[in-house]
Image (cartoon, rainbow over all chains, first blue to last red; front, side, top):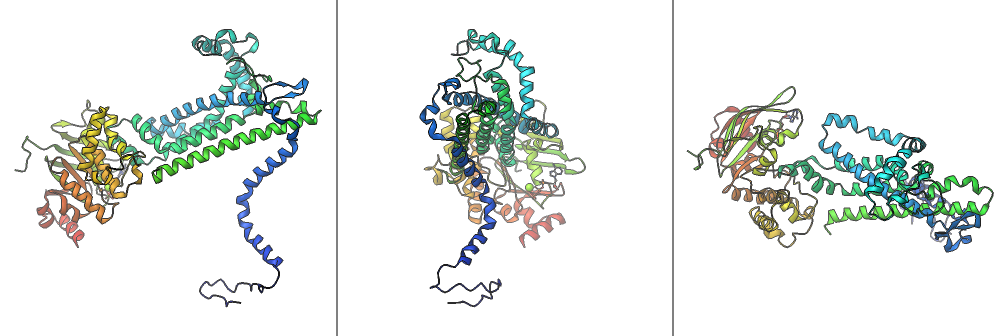
Length: 333
Length: 256
Ligand SMILES: Nc1ncnc2c1ncn2[C@@H]1O[C@H](COP(=O)(O)OP(=O)(O)OP(=O)(O)O)[C@@H](O)[C@H]1O
Ligand SMILES: [Mg+2]
């Protein structure tokens, strides 16, 4: 059954469809592929993620390591590779860095959106971008040569004397030979590196609070601080959570700068000032060593897969949470 | 002869002038607001109505670049005096905005907001919230959903919640800047009923571009044009026998 071209649509005659009895036409298949072309770019990011995951999986020879892979025993000379050490190291650096950069980011964002005179804010706000533009390796070398010695001489002993009651923080655990390299300086560097993203996102969240809403709070006799705390941060809480999840991604994935100050030893830290290693830094620093051994290379690939999975999972959880908050606000669940 | 029994107006505006960098937004306004009255401030768009009510609780200070001179006395005390805290001024002189501005929290917490920031005791908060919701004419509609997010309410309910929120801190003056302009006719009617009840207990100052609304709810009308107070007086007189040709034109144009 062929229909006459519809004059109302003005699109001209459609190609005549093949008779129902005919086998599925190849041209029809091609045509639907052709129609899909404009959608393809949108699928590219997903395709890239899948491709990375699959090829990494193939390169990893995952069957070789089994569950010991996630263990905490690590000795490359004996061929015992439990990357649990590295996973712990990554979290031990990324989580505190995230907490610190969120606190700092909140402070900076609140100051600039709420208290700073507009003219001054306009000058100071773009400086966060400058911070984001510094290459990691510059952070790394700066931290190593200029900051780590001070950590070793001043900050770590200070922490030890003030936080002695916290397990792992007592003074006797500071190794005099560490030169300040270890967890605290790695956390410090990561805090700085996550700071631009947390600050920017929190600032945008606060900026998106309608003026009327601000003024309504003030008109009820609230101080600016109370309006920020009770209204603006609530209104912008999706942005604040996004900041946390993206900041975490930044912190756990950072490589070079951490590699330069973490101490790079394949063991769990025995105290808060100790050296350890992270997944990202390990992959980077052990690449040379892996060239002689395909098994070692497989280990690095599998480690890459683990880091991918962790960032992916964090991202997913973040999205679900943010979507949930949105639904809660709108539908009133 | 309409002066308040307790002697003098609640709010007394004298020589109020507001300047921006290059222009004068309000020019030497003199106006009194007696107790238990509703004054409608009318005038064409851009004549300075919003600027005027924002001077009455010092909200105008949040806009950089404006300078205020003249005096605004609240029970005889100039609210712009150096020792006066704007936060306290705003607890006495509340404000409702053009669009409903409910906070992203529950109906109850919205109504309780001003009491919480004033650190009122919990029992007092419960009592004041219930009372304020009732006075805003919203209690019957929301009494079973006090814990629901306020954003789930209809626009008209949200606006009455904003009124309730302002009432909860027991202000003696309430500024309403075109509170019904974002609402449909039925929601508008409800808000107008609320306003008629409220003027029995406090001073209401209503900005409206709608002369019909002024006729329905107000006792007094003040007509502004290009930043000047052209004429003011009892509503019937102002709307039926305005003396100034500008007022005549505005009032008849809006009625037609
Ligand atoms: N910060 C400012 N700087 C300069 N001019 C301003 C500023 N704020 C407002 N104006 C001007 O002052 C005039 C009065 O503004 P206002 O908002 O008070 O008018 P309005 O009577 O409330 O108008 P509408 O009925 O449209 O709400 C307008 O012409 C406006 O452009
Ligand atoms: Mg206005």
